Image (cartoon, rainbow, N blue to C red):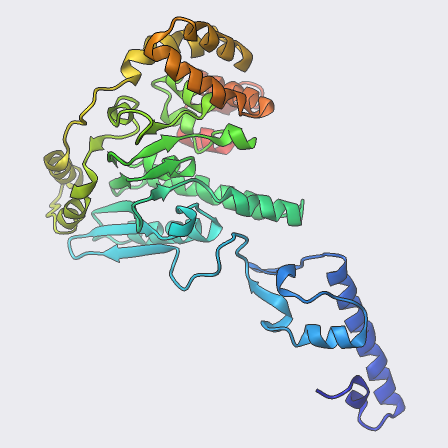
Length: 403
């Protein structure tokens, strides 16, 4: 590289002016980076971790300008994973009009970031605009998880880097739009809820027309433990069982897997069909060759019924519901009252005592402010509206707007 003085060529007055101006520009650029500013440009940003330590010395600035990639720019990816050559969402279209979306971020258990939800929205829009589309399926490329939730780590990193960042609002808006599109799609949907399905994972599966659970399915809404509220219109999804919804939201209790019988997922209405995991490949193959005819839902009803079976164990939740009605019903006006009621019921011993003991631990791990916010929001949804803000909460659209 040439020394900075060589830029001017002859060392003339014009050359000295150019040299001075370049020094000013380089000094200003270095100062901005030194002060920790992170300019954003259409989905790209400076990642300070890719830049060398900056000083105002000319040699340091020259090394900065030679940094690869140019100027330290890279696609925004605030997760701990390196950028992957694999797409975050895989899609497949078959001749019978069946469409498949497979989440493909296995190392992060398919935690959904803005890029992933944008891809899903784009795919669904294309499916719906194609007259030959008969049905679509949401699944995962990994057996570990359908989706462990929204990528909260990326959102937190964005806010930490810039308190005024628009990334969180855009990421959450994408999630809510995707949930609404799945719920309102003219094309019937099948969600394969195999493995961990939590938070936003429930959002993209719980509003599908058909919801297949397996012996590996684990469902939970653990947001209060990290000072968020259980959003994704969970309260609207569970509005037919409000006491159960409150119990799950305030305690983060897990259902399915090793935590409770799979039949609990069917009792709660979260799943519609139980299919053992070893039958899932055959189910997908059958869906991809199914003759839908003029009645897609009728064809799906028949096919899914032929694969579905009854779980081995009866539902434990069904026996616990009278206790949950007493602990989490309307008469318990505050989170503290819910906890006190659970503690009182736990004194009675038996299976209920064990379940409530674990639930109280989950409750105590929650943020008091978001626990209160969660209960307030749920009661408004169950009542059908938020009178303070004048928003009707008797529709999915209204609940998502409120959240």
